Length: 236
Image 1 (cartoon, one colour):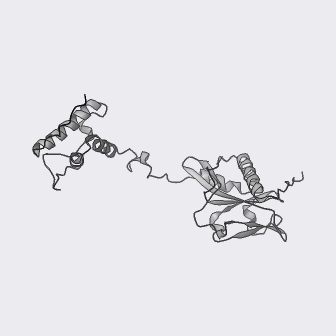
Image 2 (tube, one colour; image 1 turned 180 degrees about the horizontal axis):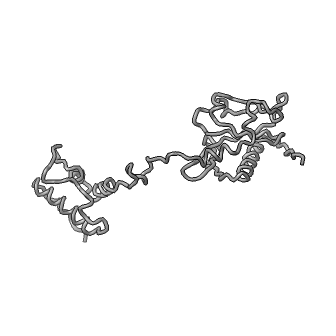
Image 3 (cartoon, helix red, strand yellow; image 1 turned 120 degrees about the vertical axis):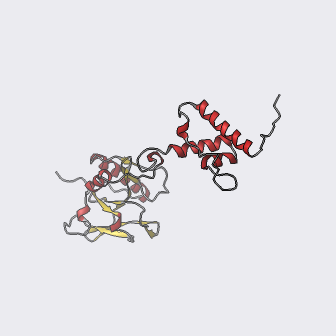
């Protein structure tokens, strides 16, 4: 069956939007999950993959014939794309209805490249219709990031001490909170009578006990330093 040639859209802006829609269709046909970020200020047009394993793509299209090939512009504005701008280039030679999925490092520093769909030995021919590269990159194994807050410490459990210490600081709203949490007196020396805050000493599910424990610690701290709480006028 003869390959159908797509109709050429002359307006470059419209052709670019159309090429993006064709990319979404083709990627979906190859079983890839495609998402488009909001806005036009990103250095990439699409991301492919699933949560925790995305790869980014810049989509370009060309109708400009150059000998037996097609000249495709791959710059952003008037400059070549910076390293890290995207992971893959998806270049579409419109008259030949051929897609090239090219790793970004191969076009780094370039402002254009030439695609030869009718030559099996051309430089980028091994990347023609190489949708498998996107699938491998987005589904391939790899270490998950440990920096996400939900991962907590290296053991995988969330760091409850950090969260509870932050809660204590917000509850007391004053200098005593920091000293109770760190076990340091206001002068900087360790206060043996004021041990560090340990969330495990109060049942985590009983908020009343937790609040009472905090209040007692603050009251004890103030008594040792001969401090009295400020009196506030009650609102009528």
